[in-house]
Image 1 (cartoon, helix red, strand yellow):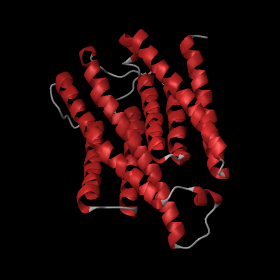
Image 2: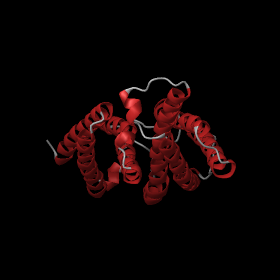
Image 3: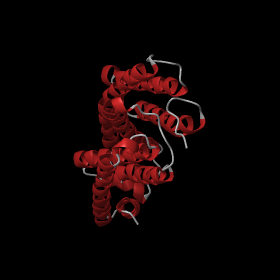
Length: 275
């Protein structure tokens, strides 16, 4: 067993234990389990960070063109954003969104060892730092906002219909907390998404001699940007709060996931993952 394989098994075990503790702690309102979940997530995140660093340091010539690296990096981004949210609101509830997605993406990265992406070597720094990095963090923020949106809609409906709350509902953060998470995610996520998109178009200009080529991935990405921009505008200018931004951010996140899993694998595009 290589060092990378050992790290990967330990990372999966820690993320899986963390997810289990988070779910059990939330269902049983057990703060000890929530703390154990955080400890497992911290350990998994630390090893995951080391795994990514070693991959880039030791195998830079090949790792940046490997599809597995990008899945792993996206999963890492979910945990990073979760920790930022936890520091802000001191509630492990949002790990219910981040933890399963991070675990799924990390396992997917191992299954995608043979996948390749097209990446010119002379643009690797720009592509990773500005395009991939900012896009992935913005997607992780979208996920947190979408998770908060689902919880907001559920809790709001329960309150409006005066239905009895389950033990989970009673221990959920307030509607205001979910709305604030939605607000933070949009305020930070949209500028990052815009920066990542601009870097991607510059990369396309240098690689394919034109910034926009009606590639399916580019079309869907622009659709996401316009919806994201509309949501950003409605939040900042119109003052949207509550249910409307919750619903729209869920739609934006779902389209983003369809783009990631559908277009990248099943539709011919510059962004295809190839065996």
